[in-house]
Image (tube, chains in turn cyan, purple):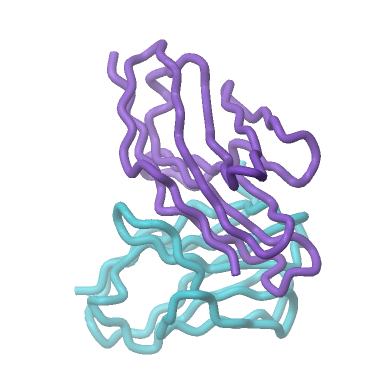
Length: 110
Length: 117
């Protein structure tokens, strides 16, 4: 049973819309991450957080933003979606360096 | 800085034959190493991890991996492939405590394993 919950699982929207991908974990983990995965490609870290009020940019530049107001919640926001944002977004948290992933949010921007 | 290279983008085996998925890494500090598996339309699942204990690590579903510092390798093996093993496998490295990237994990490019009947 997943301890990290991502919603929506699938989202198809038009260009210019604002979207928020939700990520929640019930394990009390301090460290949380967002990865972006294009089909057939490796995962790229786009954001991470070491705890409440901590957010950092990852290795891959992204136009998205994140917030960490509560330990269990790490939403990702795109203010104005574009077709280039079409991808799968995976949320994860760690405890002792072991990642637990959510099921992912597959975003398609038309 | 840390990096990981999976040497094969695709591996194809017959059911019942051995599996070898190759992974090389580089790390400035004593690394932690992981293998994750991703089945189609499912989330990533941890197979096994190495964190400076025994160099031969046993994971779930009969997989194991051996950490070889001299070769900077962490290859994943299984004696006998099963149809259900068909998936994409990711080798992952993380620098341990004290490294500036502690807690950040770097993924390899992935290896797609196909298992033929």
